[in-house]
Length: 139
Image (cartoon, rainbow, N blue to C red; front, side, top):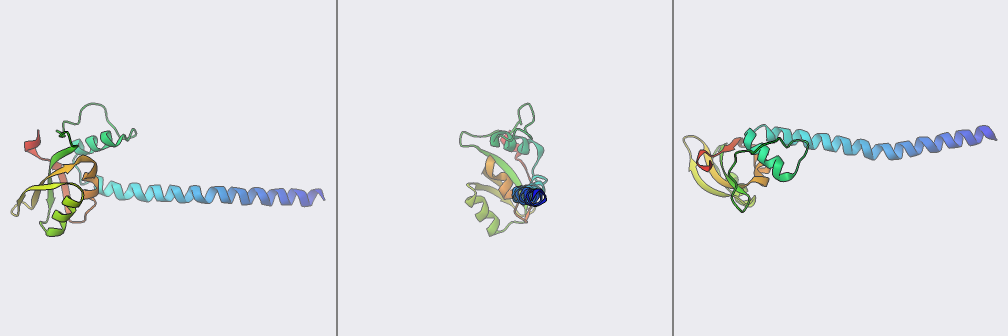
């Protein structure tokens, strides 16, 4: 009788551990996959812009002390240079993210856009975007 109770208790403990562990493992994998996708986008964004993005997002793990040096208007937007092949889908995406195309240069394959700081990472996730930097006129 004691052996049956011990086995039943052990089986219950194993089932509870599995039920508690599976969602935790899934969440950990999802978090890792999400951070990997953001890492690719983050690599396209200049350091001062990333610093400002993290500061505005309140990401305490990544916020660095000191000012970013990025001029942000009262609506939370900044002027950026987007290095990408010029095409209509990119311009539509900028508009969909709350940005506005200010100028384009087909020679340099650059779009100057007024973008909400919090949307710059989403823009960087676009496959046609090679780099996003602070526009020199924004200083």
